[in-house]
Image 1 (cartoon, rainbow, N blue to C red):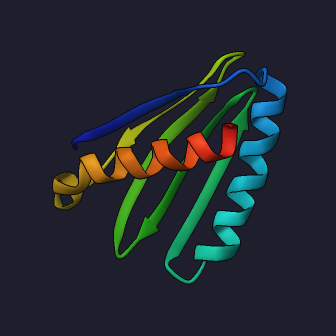
Image 2 (image 1 turned 60 degrees about the horizontal axis):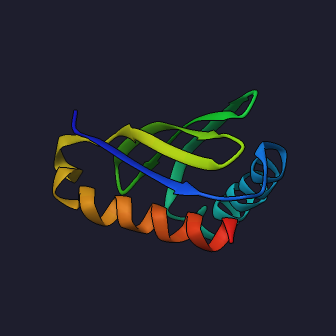
Length: 100
């Protein structure tokens, strides 16, 4: 399976970053619930292990918050590999807005 990864720097500290990320993920579930299924996520300290299905494709990965950055990485199905750059850019753009 091809992977994706991106990272965004911030100056919020770990706890504030996790708080914003939690609120954001609740919003994603609310706003895109009709396109997503099998949404799951488990926080392990400041790392979220997540998975969901969109348009029949299973996506899984992790999101890690530290004092000064948030990193997201995961696996894409082979059928979605051509969208890897777009996926990374979209995640990065959303994180920049969220953590600014």
